[in-house]
Image (cartoon, rainbow, N blue to C red):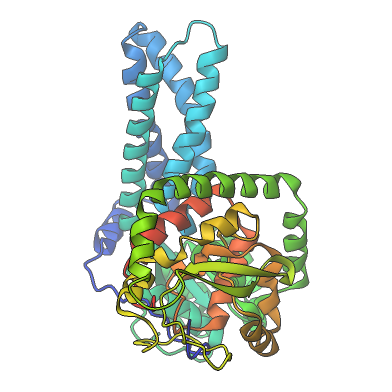
Length: 464
């Protein structure tokens, strides 16, 4: 846990890598309009989904019948892919393609079952689904790398600077800032080609042809409405800064929370099928996890027992609704780590952590006993990480929105953690990512977080 929860600098590594943006700019230069690019993207999706389906059907049907049926099946599959790709920015092309492929597979399986004369066969259908997924994910990765969404930022306050920093921090983000319009260009705008004052908005938009226009403050928004309406035939989309952060970056800026947003949270949590799906998911994953990890439990227990003290360590944490519960972990510190009875944050190179305990913390194997908390219904596999009551009191006194995290069960892993906000990082940023998770929960998002926990979590340098 962080010794300095107010630190604003995330422990996220900067990636300095070659990008495909110059190639994407060439593609834009070769086509005549944004609509042409859109048709190329859609055409690629159609062809790459249709080919494996046609190959499947061509073995049993005449060419014309195979082509016709393949077109019908492709339409069903593309509807599923399109719905999944609506979460493209935050879930990424691989997860979105996987979700769309699975949904399409279910729909096509129903077609196979109920429509006379169609019998794909399970092995062939599975092979086709794998081919659709691989081709779709590859295509979406190529599109994401080659054709970045061109972003114009209107406004020059702190939000404008935050948008620029967020997009410039990750060279792999599917966005490229092409213009900044406002009275006082924020830091970092000097290298951007499309710069100008508010009265130069038309010139900048016509020159840079953005895909997305972000309004970052009320003054700029009020002024820009009329010019943007006049320029609307150019086909760009206009979003507020909070909407952009939530749907493109995957977090909810605290200073932009509105009553409407709070109402959406209340609405989502009232859906009984959402809670049922979440609980079912937790039980399945926790049961499988306990079965898979069971052979390792004696070894893990022996590792912990190499230092004096109990094998299992427990602490009182706050869960859903602010209720107290006892959370279990494999002990990784000395038995007298809190001898005075006063809760202490863990710190980097903490002397209380045992040598083997540090390895358990780095690999997150110390969290395994929390699967039992999940089985008991006290925790979830994925959710905001729980804190101790004393720390919760400190945080909520500093940040009023902190208690919103307790609208759902705490999790073994979470959206904030896999995005680098753990350890010695900002509590505010963690809350922003937690709130995004609460509002946008889905099984697909949980699966992505679990996957990222494995990929990014093992030996994470701030997991101390």
